[in-house]
Image 1: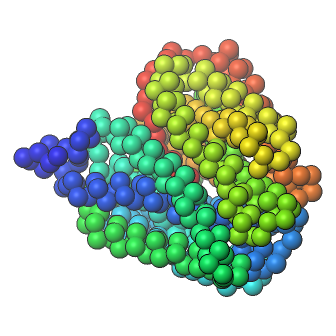
Image 2 (image 1 turned 180 degrees about the horizontal axis):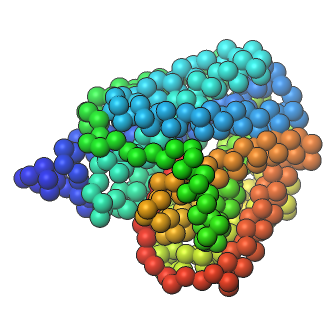
Image 3 (image 1 turned 30 degrees about the vertical axis):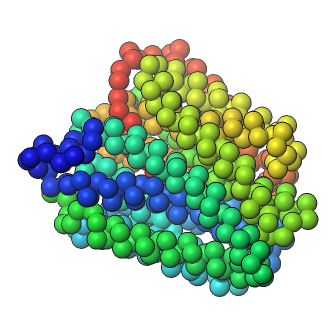
Amino acid sequence: MLSATIQHARFGFIGLEPGVRARHMWVLLYAAYVTIGLATFDAFATPYVLSTAIGIPTGEQGAIVGQLNVYTELVLLIAYTPLGVLADRIGRRAVYALGFVGLALGYALFPYAGTVTELALVRVIYSIGLGAVTATIATLLADYAVVEHRGRLVGFVGVLNGLGVVSGAALLGRLPKVFADLGHDPFTAGQYTLFVVAGLCLVSACVVGLGLRPGTAVAPEQRPTVRELFRAGFGAAFGNPRIALAYASAFVARGDMVVVGTFLVLWGKVAAMEGGMTAADALSAGRIPFIVAQSSALLWAIAAIFILDRFHRVTGLMVCLGIATTAYLGLALVEDPLDRANLPFFVLLGVGQISAFLGSQTLIGKEAPAAHRGSVIGAFSLAGGIGILIISGVGGQIFDQIGPRAPFILVGLMNGLVFLAAIMVRLRAPEPRLQASLPVQTR
């Protein structure tokens, strides 16, 4: 795979930057497979710990999970820039390895949280690790592939991310039941599960710490200051309604992903426990809707990347938001998420979730001006972070007070509003269709 000269090295169909070798790429692909699956296991761990370690009734868990997600996102918003600067100073692989260590420490401490406050403090450690691994893998894609092949690597890594999430949910999510069947009590079964996940994080820390390219980037990234972010990033939305639309779509699309990743798992677990299952059996049964949704999202993403390039970017976003609106509002018809007759609703949910995400990404990828691309992409990410904060907080409250379907109906209505805004922008501010590669956003 490696050509005679480093300057023209290739890894299959991907051209590599000078100094990047095939072994570095193999490690990157391993990291792409395990990172998101391990980083998002908190969606299973948190409800389990709330039930078995802290003893929170199922009817009160929605608000707590939503609030914990708010804390996580606040830590991420604060930590991303310092972590990026640190990666420029000491190297990507060091920050990546330390991120996995942070995840391992967080998961290992999860079962020892005796109160919600203690669990929130543990999640601060987890959140810093999460920020380190997700930010670093996004940066490595730009470091490793030549510009003209970067889109290929983005697509390949995206597929591996999805496979990691699905396999992590299918295999790791079943471990509490496996340990319970071996005769362990619910708390011990969850504790052993989290120790296994922590161990995998430590193994991954060693793999990336030893296997990624050593050293720092040739030129540190230029990160916009907070002032530049607001002046150039959000200022661009006033002069370009398509950028404003992209920010609005990021707000709902990132919130969509949190609702699926958090409240779908919780809904399945709560339904199973209300049906008389133990915590371990409930987590095993309750993960099925999530696995179905993520599997369909993965398959649809592979096709959607090619389909979206054939549409005007705003038209493509309209289609994506229309699918998402239908998918989320359709869950109003679901009474029991564990009834196999309802699986088609969760297939459509996965398609809607990833459609909104890809549609927003493709639009901002085209509209971000070269002179202020860093600020505009940064503001786009910030809009998504704000969406997570608000939808997590509100979604958790209405999950408990109204019902498990309420957060999904909420984001369905929000997708519908942005869909109507997209129609207005398409009619009043059209732009010639142009091709653009997908930017990277892992969280």
